[in-house]
Length: 193
View 1 (cartoon, rainbow, N blue to C red):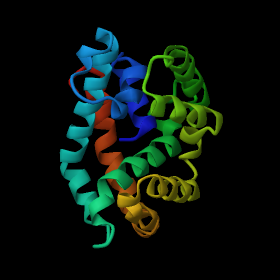
View 2: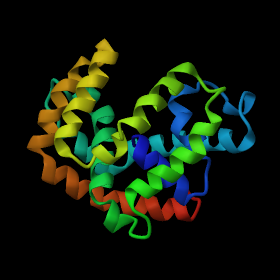
View 3: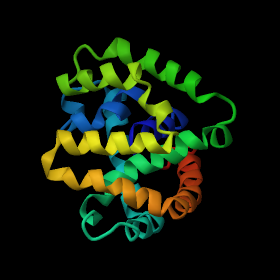
View 4: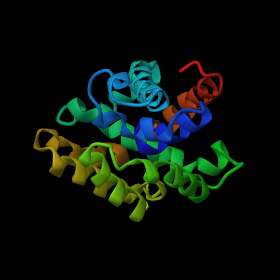
């Protein structure tokens, strides 16, 4: 899962949005440096990542990547799942519009980032101003996202090429997402993630 799905599942689980969004920027035991609520949010994010990667549907989705992109497929899939969540938001979460949800999340997160890792603060400057999570609904925007990720981390250069896998297998990925994501939503509501 990427930014949007982590925020969405965290909100359904009544978990810290800051902790869930920041988790990839925190190493080690989060209870050593963060409040209990933020630390639990970081741990929820980590559990969601492990759970998602182990789902049979997600393992099946990896088979839709070419040999040259297979290694980075899990990272590309995180972005792809956010695309389908943003695209189908009104069906999956009809009680609140995506821009309203994101505005609320921003209001909860930004006042608390002063003591967070510098890379996380830098991410937040672009994430909200450029409306990344809303734009995930636009399939062509994913090409930009995947290229930018590849440029920031040269050992992930193959991410640039995963856009073609996304386009070629769009309907397969869509069907896979609709199989597993509603289950994850239910687990988040039940606090069983």
